[in-house]
Amino acid sequence: MLEKLWKKFVNYETVSYIICGVLTTAVDWVVYAVVCEAGIDYRIAQAVSWAAAVAFAYVVNKLIVFKNFNFHPGYLWKEFCSFVACRGFSGVLTWVMLVVMVDWMAWNKYLAKVFVSAVNLVLNYVFSKLWIFKDSKEKEGSDAA
Image 1 (spheres, one colour):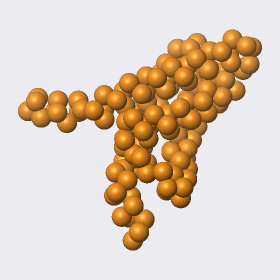
Image 2 (tube, rainbow, N blue to C red):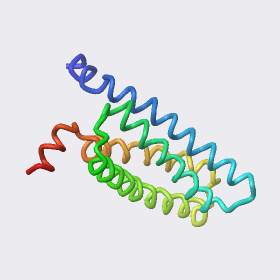
Image 3 (cartoon, rainbow, N blue to C red):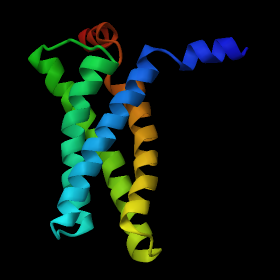
């Protein structure tokens, strides 16, 4: 039973998602820290770091994690819009959580950032796996119908 679980959850997709997720989180954190340390409010820093991380994540998730090489302009636009919409949902949710933790609960802005980053990683994997980067042949078939 453990072997079945291992094979199901420890595979190229999940391992590459974790690695790319760590790199995306690094982009998010570096931009967040640079903007915060420049004296800009942490809420604006969160929005800027989110945008940088989303741009980076789209490329690495599409090409490395989910190996989706469909570059037809219509398909690419639809996929990108879905990606940004999902990341927008998780981005707004994590931004609100960050504000609640820092402003209302008096957490340190970096400690709160750690917590919301973990929530964000899980949400984004679920959205990417189940909705955005489905097998491109599966999506093409459903688009043709």
